[in-house]
Length: 346
Image 1 (cartoon, rainbow, N blue to C red):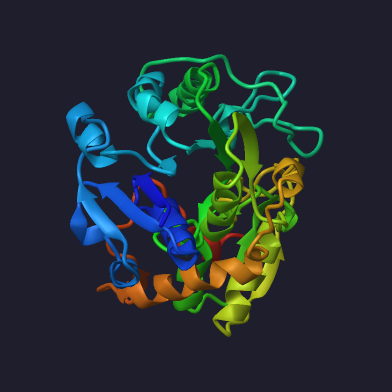
Image 2: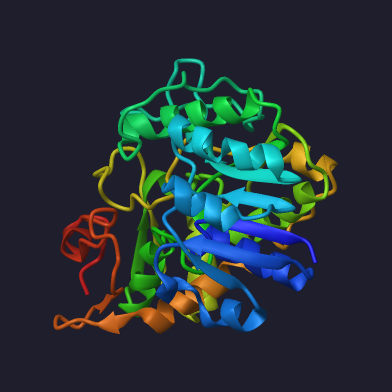
């Protein structure tokens, strides 16, 4: 069997890739630090867990072993990370490195982590300008995209057959952060209304981990040095995403579509981008990639698992254990919503 080695293999992306490849008959080894994060379904399907720190040179070499037909790095954030994995990428038959749309800039140099939102005139092609390569702390808003560009440059400037996949707002089982929780929690809390900023038309292209995994399988069979966008076949608006989640959970609410005069903190969901941010995925399709499904079809597994993981708190609302509180800070200020002039008294 062909062997795939996935660095960061127990995250949402790595796990989805493993599921796809195992179904296709690959031997899949997953490198991560915590064996508890290996899901039972992957273990039962034959995924092998290798306990190692991806940033430890000796541990990485031991995990790579005698070689791999496919090397996937889900944890390459800096130029140093890229240089660390480069010897293995040059040896592997095919290598895939996960990057991000955060590298792209608009005509004014703005990007998705800028203080001012970018304004892309249309779908973003892989040839769109990017940030200059940078270093420093990749965990910051300003440092993330620049470090990703630096990592990409190291790999693409080499002779290694590396495919860079630029993803956008990944969703799927185990996604961190689970952006869909913004609407799922409101359904569980039986909110009678949903406030949506910018009339709900904001959109920021999502990427299903399952669709990204399908693209990985496609490029694994066609090794080469390239950049590909990875996103769902549709880019639903925030209003559409709210409706998909509510419909799946058999909940109805009154939509309150806020205009530009409203408090900007009200209804500011995770996909509220305007103009819409959309990735052009034509290049992947031209290689023979076919998505698993659109957003509505691929998000249901994550929705169901969020519901299964949720628990009630002392105040009677639903909470998600282990959630990133900072990411969702002020996201569920029901008091402010109910006190706003847009909500009729009950």
